[in-house]
Length: 170
View 1 (cartoon, rainbow, N blue to C red):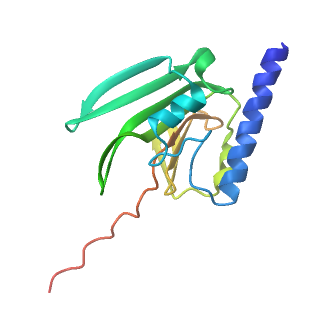
View 2: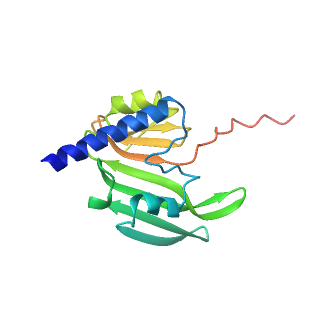
View 3: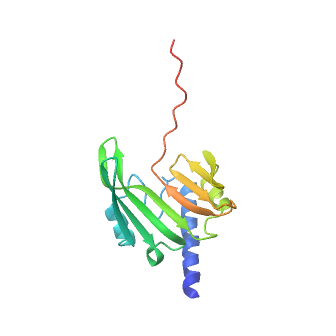
């Protein structure tokens, strides 16, 4: 039982850290992983070897996916997945985190916690009876069907504003 309480306490502290970092305007990152910046080697140094590793080709680029599950996932989460391989204006960076996905355990990231931590979203969508909140800072939060708890937090590099409609030619 003490182990479970310790894991819950760590999850609460991690959530508080996320909220504090967000409130003072840091880039969207979690647990020292910032998409577009953090490398595969840095993730390995912080979290060790993944539970599973998968390799694939995406648009003719070699990519890697690391999945941390069970004992290897961070406290408060069922699973952490890091996708590597990012195409930048400077070229392809095969060892840079492109996307970080966190699947929290129930009641770790409630809707109010998300809204208090990140503020009003830049967009909201509903698909498969689930709400998703979008933030240009690079975060998408998907909630359970009841809309009360986050079931997936997806961190990406910041998203550009979408271009408006083109001006008519004269």
